[in-house]
Image 1 (cartoon, rainbow, N blue to C red):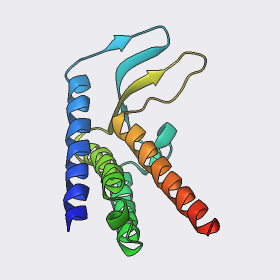
Image 2 (image 1 turned 180 degrees about the vertical axis):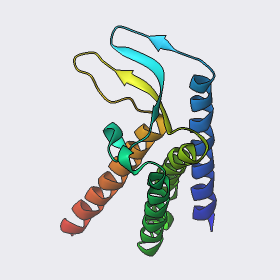
Image 3 (image 1 turned 90 degrees about the vertical axis):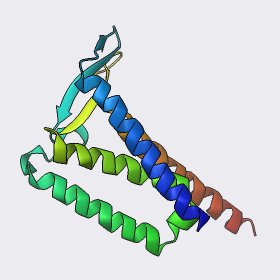
Length: 149
């Protein structure tokens, strides 16, 4: 049962932290640097604004995908094995979907334009990438241990 507390706490912390950061930008914070800018952008699509044509339906599709992934994590005992990493993933995903329900789109604000132009992204996006990378790393380590037996 301790894993469930870690899971829910991780979801809550990431969700609240991401929403606080987004509110800072919604309330007018902006920074323009030579290679990095912090600017408010509402992303109506997903990564690189893909699927923006789905408009209002995109939020329901993403919510459905989150439920399917949650079911898969539960079925595969990933929440039990990795409650914090799972919580980070779901807290980030929920925060971005929450934006779609209460705002014009997902609030993005980090824009790298140094050696090349990159898509504008946010803290939740980074945490999703981090949690997926950690899950891959854990499974790679587990497979390494099993192959050395």
